[in-house]
Image 1 (cartoon, rainbow, N blue to C red):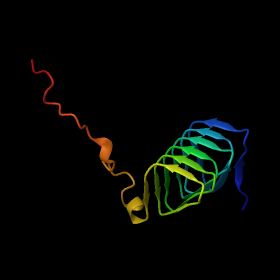
Image 2 (cartoon, helix red, strand yellow; image 1 turned 180 degrees about the vertical axis):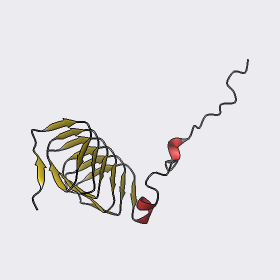
Image 3 (spheres, rainbow, N blue to C red; image 1 turned 120 degrees about the horizontal axis):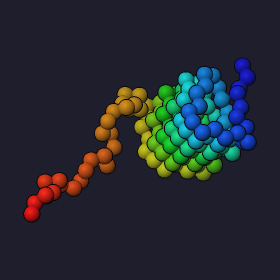
Image 4 (cartoon, rainbow, N blue to C red; image 1 turned 135 degrees about the vertical axis):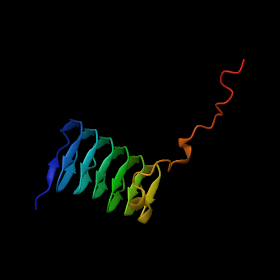
Length: 131
């Protein structure tokens, strides 16, 4: 089976959906969604969430990655965002700024609200309007 390729001169704004395997080497501004395998090439720049079966990152992603199987960050990859994956591999030299949930924890609460400790308001609101 052949892989579909978006070359480095391709720029897309919006949601990108595909079914099988895809290699992205261009710029995507929006969500990438699939039940297939995604390879993000070394020239690729993605701003948005990636939701696929598996992903291998050589380029730069600014957004969250959610995969049911495996997420690999290769040597010069950059990820600014959170990862939820069944399996996670990060090579030496990769940059990852975010949090990760791997294994059963990632599959169990893929959309659980309040999982981030900073999601609450720390200021008391009962002092508003006292004159």
